Image 1 (cartoon, rainbow, N blue to C red):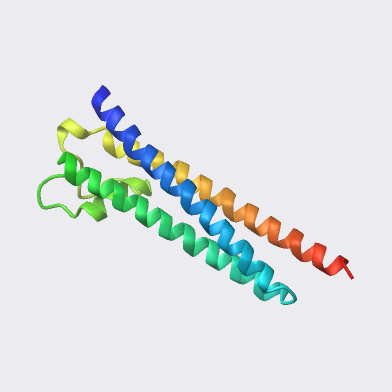
Image 2 (cartoon, rainbow, N blue to C red):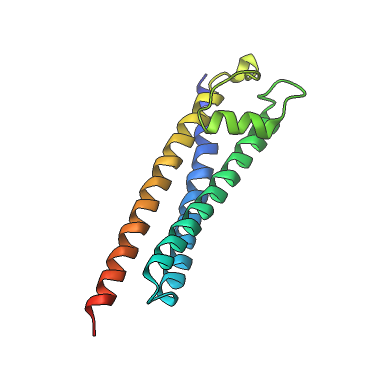
Length: 145
């Protein structure tokens, strides 16, 4: 059981690093895009939010691929199962319906779910912060001469 927790923690740490780097890069890119769209407040706000959400969805997809690779390396899913689907089901906490991990890796699914919940919460916080900063920047631009 301890080995499962260590492996799950290692994969989670990789995903946390990916999410951190991706978030920093996306915010930096979006800050530049937002500044270049000054004067079109509604379009700017909408564009920034859509771009942020899409960038974060891409990060989540990459993190799910990391989990599917871990399942493949570990042999954690039953033979013949779709590893990407299995990873999506765990990461999004959708729950098991048709695929469950092999007996010796039962904790890996909940570890992936815990990682997914954390990453989705982080993404929600990023979306909110980007929205708030964009609105503040727009307000500052309308106040300045």
